[in-house]
Amino acid sequence: MSFFVALTYALPPGTPKDRVGMLRRAFVDTMGDREFFAEMKKFRLEVDPVGGKEVEEIINDFFKLDTALIGKLKDIFYK
Image (tube, rainbow, N blue to C red):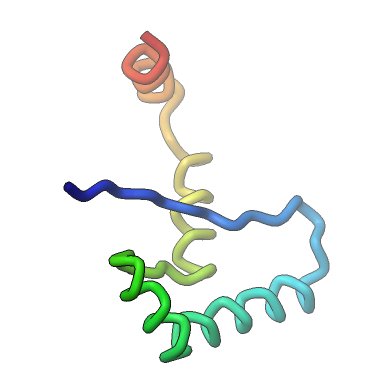
């Protein structure tokens, strides 16, 4: 049996850019750490990271959605 879990790390608006950069670098460093992946493998966890810039673009795209589409998505997700 397998399942999918997605975790997104977010910071509040106005977080200083140097802190955002520091946390993004720490994430990238962790995703490049062989020991981290060895631990994940022991627990049979698959890691498929998405970088901060890409997540930021995805989130920003949500704010560009047409209001009619947002209404349809609400109907789908909140029924």
